[in-house]
Length: 168
Figure 1 (cartoon, rainbow, N blue to C red):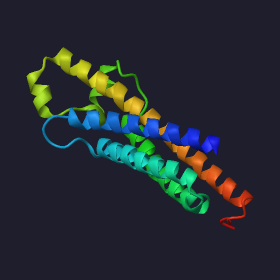
Figure 2 (cartoon, rainbow, N blue to C red; figure 1 turned 90 degrees about the horizontal axis):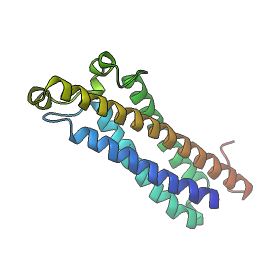
Figure 3 (cartoon, helix red, strand yellow; figure 1 turned 180 degrees about the vertical axis):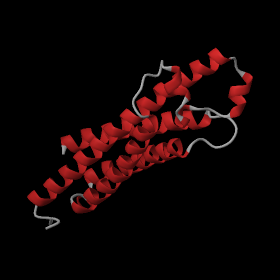
C-alpha cells in the first residue's frame, strides 16, 4: 500500500508538470492554435491528474482496487505512451543550441505574431527555450508512463494475491 501511495503521489506531481509545461507551450504559441502534439500533451497531463486522484481514492477503497484500477492505469499508460511517442517523434534527437535543428521542427515554433515582432536573435532564443521545454515535457511523459505501468502491475499483483481474479 505504501508503494502505491508513493507512486500515486509521483504520478500526481509528474502529471502536474506535464500539464503545466504543455499549457505554457500552448499559451505562448501566439495567435492561432498550437500544434496538436502540444495540445495532446496537455490532455495527457490532465488525464494523468484525474487518474492519479482517482487512484489515491482507490487506495483507500477496497472496491476499486485490483482489476478495476489496473485497467484504468493500463488505459492511462497507453494514452500517455502515445503522447511520449508523439513528442519523441516530433522533437527527434538534437541539441537545442543547434539553430538548424530548432528551426526545422514544427513543435518548437511559435505563431507568426511572435516571429514578426522580434529580432532574429530573440526569436532563436525563444525557440531554444521552447525546445528545452518540449524535451523536458517528453521526458516527464515517459516518467509518467513508467509510473502508470508500475501501478497497473502493482494493482494486478495485489489483486491476485488477495484472490480478486486475474486476466487469465
